[in-house]
Image 1 (cartoon, rainbow, N blue to C red):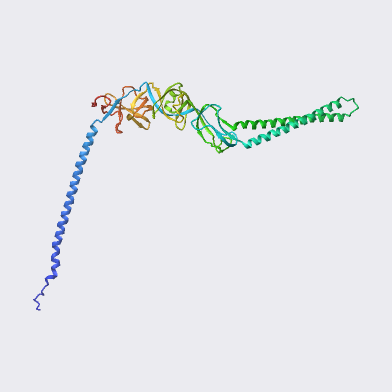
Image 2: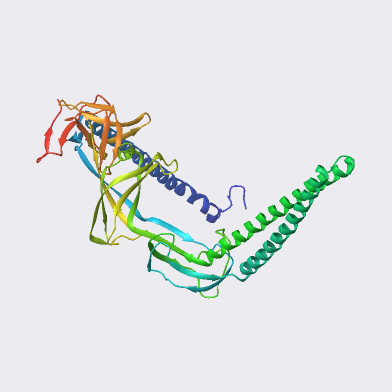
Length: 422
């Protein structure tokens, strides 16, 4: 190779280098395109948000300027008399559970459930072998004590006569000591006689007690009535008493006159505590059953747990149409004085108590504090805060404040009357 000659270069040596400038330009174009796209999207989204915000602001401004529309009704005075229907329960005039008064075994029972019995009628008999034996022993002890009285009485008589002879004998015949000794013996004999007589009285009382208990071998009805429960059978062991460990014999009730018990709410107590208030008793399961009665007595005290007043109504039941334990409906007529009747939907319960929104003729809202006297579900009786003829708003929005004007929709008239507040 001469100095003038240049070595021949391999074209493959620059093959990769020739390709790099073209790839770089493509990547630059691609990056620029992505950047432009993102910038355009960002501007578009920002523009749309600005438009939405402007529309929302315009809508809020329109809503704020628009007068809200509310439904109103005109309140009226509560009717002079108002029915009050409460659940009641019937109870017999007299009802008692009969227990055994002596220990023994049931010899026989003569009546069953549903039987009507008379006062003093025999219901059952009880065999009392232990009581009979005790009575025999007590009588024997009485006989012994009576015999002792006879002996003590003879001794006392002898001691008395002996003392009299020694007391009346001439002086010097007997000594003073002997005279005093006979006197003490006479007094001792009298004391022994009195002790024997006291023992006789004690034994006689025991005999009388056991004899009285034997009368309870016959179980008798305490009053006229019907047997509503029998819990004995032949041969049953019965124990005297009415403790939790003893079983009853019968349960008897007198139902020719009935009591009806009603638990009235506290708000009606003032009126129902007036005796002779009329009441009507009906039963849902007996449509033809209807009794008229009067309030006979009340507890005159409010139950602190239920806040109710116990009321009793006496009604005749000579035909036995009512039975104890029935569920009945009792209707009263309550009088109302100066109360206003308003829909329950008009009530607003705030932190300072119940309120009602009153709307004047100009559509101005005013919140008034009210006092609820009676809640009858869809309507309430207001004692203070309203006057007859006031227009009250129903289901009022919480965003409406006092002094705000509204559109009135009087829904209690034959046609909806809308007046726009100016």
